[in-house]
Length: 301
Image 1 (spheres, rainbow, N blue to C red):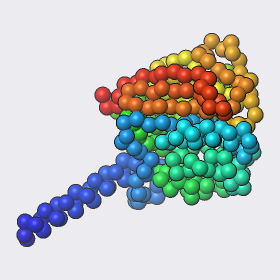
Image 2 (spheres, helix red, strand yellow):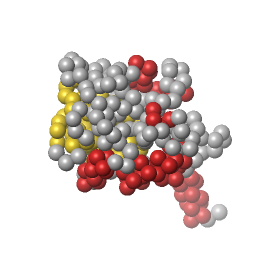
Image 3 (cartoon, rainbow, N blue to C red):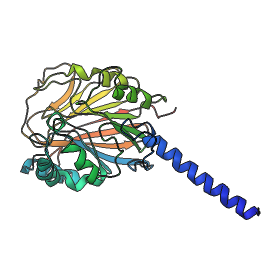
């Protein structure tokens, strides 16, 4: 065998090995992946040093307020868009087309969704097929997954699927945070802490506990307002549910709150860099209503 042929074989084996490693990293532990198969790796991750992420929920109704919020997000040139759940009224295929696509469909290729309580009952006809078509880069299990960007790891969970201690989702969550560091953002729909109409959602405590000491930020929707909670057990929780589908009042006297807004529609902007996240709540006119800085310990360090 010639020296050139040996080198070519080694290079080919190396490329195959790297592809297998990448696929296993993204989907090898995916509980929805077919047994014995490794799907193509997701492509939501990005090695860039800084990134802008926008997050909002409770706005996919096709209304004018929601569309104005979407326009503000578009002007903000997001690298990723987190949709925090709820396509009104019940997440049917028709409502995904008329309510979601007409409002936020422009962000499909950079979107990372999580199901809301309004979506989940019809997720097999609405949420699942919509996201399978709209963003093939999402991991096969679109109900919970992760990706990396700008030195942060982003974890999407599902507050509407089983999430008690010991369930597949919680086992998966704990596996993802085995490495040290807190530069992680976890997001799901219903908030653990909530000063708004729906109140605290104690059933999601296992998700919260799985992230404790491993994440710096938790982002949710569900209540139709904007809330910033003081750091609790090492994490800052932000609610961005003012996406355009009516307002819910909040209790401004809740001592856990650092800030809240229940009279305006808007979205949350995150500017990420290694070790820090700057956040701003922005209204539908593009005005910054509130801002803050969250620092974190880099992953693996």
